[in-house]
Length: 260
Image (cartoon, rainbow, N blue to C red; front, side):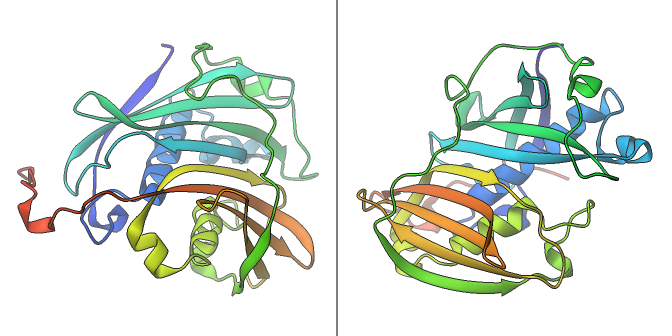
């Protein structure tokens, strides 16, 4: 089995004010599908913790290529192991609606020792999966940020219980939400997220203060978001936005509500 596919329905906790799936919702569905895939070989987070091992995602790269589907609509998420190195495992993925891909990306994963918090050879897990050398965004490249031009906003966030995942550190969704909070509301209402690149560098925990500074670049629609803890880099995020076209009123959309 080269690819693993799971079907989901869009629920109200991952839709925006126009009833469409949010980028964050798409990220979380991919990560859930990845976890489901790992359970097929009993190496999901709750399986390996007894061996003093835990999963971390080091990079996430994602592009949105078509209009996002609506609340209650069915989507398919496919994920596969696309490349394996000594310490890293890459998983590529696609999200599709009615057979059309609307989001795609890749991710880089490590397994760490709970005792040393250092990476372990990924073959302990990757050998269980057949590699499918299909790359959604092309060859896996080293993460790099555009050159910063001007800092436009800095915010702080004290982490709380809602930020914490099953590894007892700040979850990926929280970092992206913090970065998103630095952008102007009017800008987000008139633009849509086209591309996102995330690099996770250091763990953060509950009751810690994270500082996020967002910078403009030479491209007016590309932003760099740098999240730090006590002056140390925790997470770097790059987002690329595009201007929305003419908007259609929500009421004119023929929402297809599934039967329960």
